[in-house]
Image (cartoon, rainbow, N blue to C red; front, side):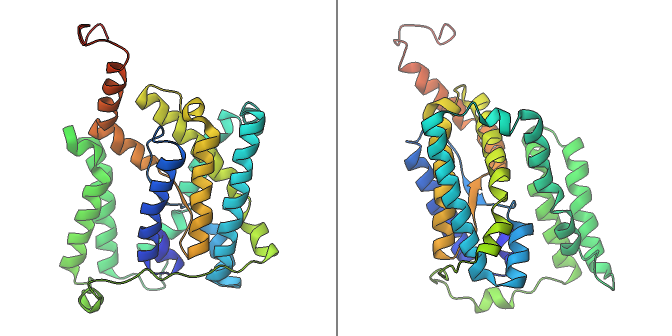
Length: 288
């Protein structure tokens, strides 16, 4: 939800594309690479420049271009393999690249907290401190199930603090229709704008490979080989391309979803079912 709010667009189209993108990803990877596709934060900084100079329509054109180039990259990997990626993007570089995605959001976080306003409002500072301290302290002191959702608890605590400070306005919620179609838009293309956003392809490629490696550890199967990096990367970028064509933001695999899958143990059930196919029921589970 934060990405469409930062871009100043209706989040309905983004939620629609998150669901459609996830279904496309599952279809293209033949259900062999569990993932959820959400709004990508990697595009915030360059797309923000394009939006401020040319408008959101041209940012959509950039999203289409990046998605198309990503699909071409996936086809290259399919043809020539993925070993060359370790030369262009070695593991030592992937970590810092993914970390930069979070660091570039520091300014956005400070702005959302009201820390960059000319006049600091006490209500904003209270909500900021309640949310931050709940997340930091909760990640240390929470145990059991609560220890894996300190961010969610922090969001709830921050919202309660917002209600207490009287800075929540329900008028738009009350005025909103019960049913509404997403606000579809068509892209416009500008080579200068595309050149600004295109380097993000390296970032989301590094991020995607990292996600697939971590998910492979969880499912006990090398997803870079089965279904293959070319399939998952193509699905990722194909969804981004479709998003740009209909007016949504880029959709990519989400590291947070990996934690959710591990937390819910759903993948452990999938692993057990896969093992069952190779061993007769007479073999004890411990032996399997």
